Length: 562
Image (cartoon, rainbow, N blue to C red; front, side, top):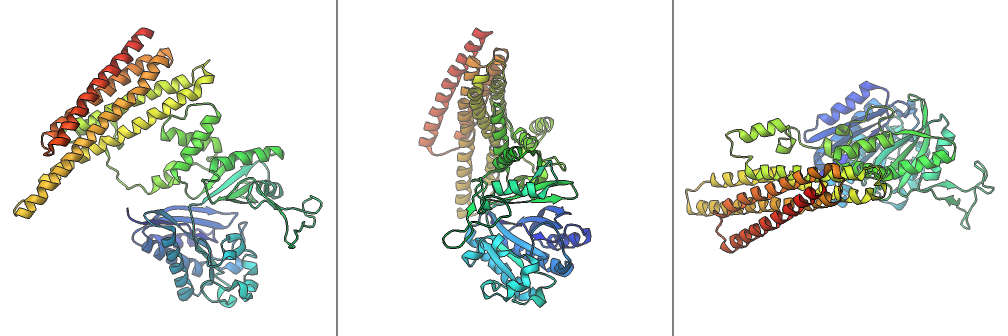
């Protein structure tokens, strides 16, 4: 797996499109980097860029963007709602795949050292890249913001981690904070008020740091101090959440701006729901929300499942349906359209021109099958037919979950629908896997065979590819058989008007099992491990018998209820 990191620099400019275009160009000019998202904010006068790639190109693109921002943005003239300290205010690096956090920390330090040395910009490392405990929290590092930077640079306790401690050189650029951190979701929740004070009150209720307790319990009064003389804080409700309230002039509303720093502790849907409760308790209403930058796919799927459960509806539905429910439930399209293809990170970094069979239209897949190309063949068709069978069983479970009068059984049918979805997805993956295994055999046969060593390597490659071509359809047969448990349960307990769909699903599953096993048997003829072939063929015979017995039971159950 190639190492991938994400970079999410925040620039103190959200109004001048020419400046943003210059920064964009500086990133896109670096080979090996893919710019995923640009999210400008006029009221905050701040823009978040998101790009990904292998480490070296990413830190090169980050350096070039910081250099461009330093020449194009004058912090002495900057105003905006968001806390900020520099033209490039923050530049976090995030591990995506194939790389450890410690390795990302090293790249963060490499970037900071170069920024200080070549650009003369002072800065600090925070989060995992912090070199001092007091600098781990960005809020501590950025305290005083740009206006307090001159004094901060004179304080020995705040000597920069990189660059000169000289405000005369930093008057225009400010200071830059660089980090290595886990995936962070920047998330704003919209309120039906224009009051920043009320938005802040909710933010203090929610954020982990909470609020400072006062002597008399009233806001604005003297703080209550502990024995060490430090202010006593009343912690907020949500762990790993930072938040403030602000007024956004372009929308004419107040928002609560959150940073969700660990979505395993506080997922986006919990932040939304708890904020909605807190707003209602204060006489306000949440009208929607806004995602800044990108979000992991699983976070959206978890949100969709959460809100479906609250509605007592089945969560055994498609990925697209879960995302749609999440968007509508959290009002992510309240202020502007929300396009999952643009906002979900896995969709953005997917390879362009994906040619997988399962991404074809039905007619294109059929046309590809009938062509003179030997693949896709029976194995891929078996997997696809099996996926359709599992989908039919899942449909009956979902319909039963929503049946009037069966409200007390919705979770039972939802559990069956979830099983069906898993079977369907596993079988869909095998559509392409089977074709890939066949193509691997063809490639092995094309290997050179002029010398003894080449012939030996070719023979070994053919045997290895053949084994995969046996194991892949066998896996298909096993999953298709297992999927029949869903159709069986629905034939016996599902809503009566849809039991014939369960029967058709079982027939599809039986067809998938028998068809896949034909592929297993023919490929076994070319495999030289006699013991493996014998045990595999015995397993095939067992699967056929089990499948036919289960199909018979399902059909009898359906006939009895018709």
